[in-house]
Image (cartoon, rainbow, N blue to C red; front, side, top):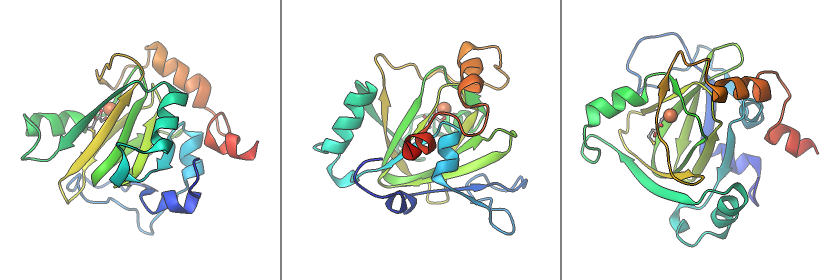
Length: 200
Ligand SMILES: CSCCC(=O)/C(O)=C/O
Ligand SMILES: [Fe+2]
């Protein structure tokens, strides 16, 4: 994806299987021993990723190209921290409720960091740590949640195709066409996604 190698992406995006502990959601929640997951494995789940230069997002040709190719016409920013986000406690709680959306969730971390957790094909939580420069797309219909990490701050660019619809559908919402479509497209291993694109 783009001109930078996969290794460059891994400097700002890391993923691992989570432990079962109920401790503070902002902790990494690694298993013992740690079980990291490749970006190719994320692509099998439909989770796409790029590394971009967050210091030049206003003029970045690579970002422009991605937006044009994928039709991301809408853009705004979401800053999450106790000081910056109105109704912070309520919002952070709702972000961490397991949910899906009927459209892609596209987030580009331009400052700070945070965790997007997604369910794999076995319904096991994978934690995706995004840092400055990481852009990820969660496909429509994937169950996921978001939390800040212990640094308590992220500024994310939010992209969308057309008029944005941010509605979270808390689990269970298995009857939604977006969920059924997700399972049809990504419910089996080695389906569409960057892993297949890369092999082509
Ligand atoms: C870092 S953006 C805030 C989280 C969010 O918008 C969302 O929908 C999480 O699932
Ligand atoms: Fe979401």
